[in-house]
Length: 179
Image 1: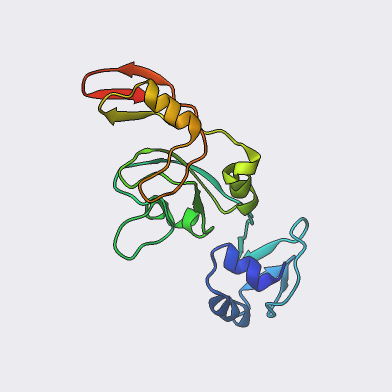
Image 2: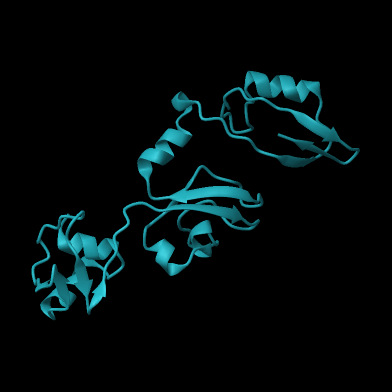
């Protein structure tokens, strides 16, 4: 990996800012001052320091987040807060994104990562990775709802959901717990 890319990925700034660090001779690789950003690193064996601080590289990040209500399951929005806004700056520099989504008013476990291969594996219908959701709904769900889920629900906008299993755990006059 190029040194300038490595330093940008580890939070030392944009490539332009990294260039300044290199010009100021603040970067050492295996104890030698390096001023060229195109220097190729061997991640397994090279030691990089910036201002006498060893730089640790981590390619992927995996976070579990208990998403609170009121946040969008996205990476950025000009008008509303996203789940990325809940992360500390150190985690944000890895550019994680949510795997799947929960509606704005929904709360629950959300996986965030920058590992695109894992996200694709978990989300691809072809991989058939089953997910379980627990929901408290207003109203009473019945066997007709179970049948509709088993056949695949068609949403108001015409989107056809894949068939799913609906299990009614309990019922009450004003709400049902389902998964």
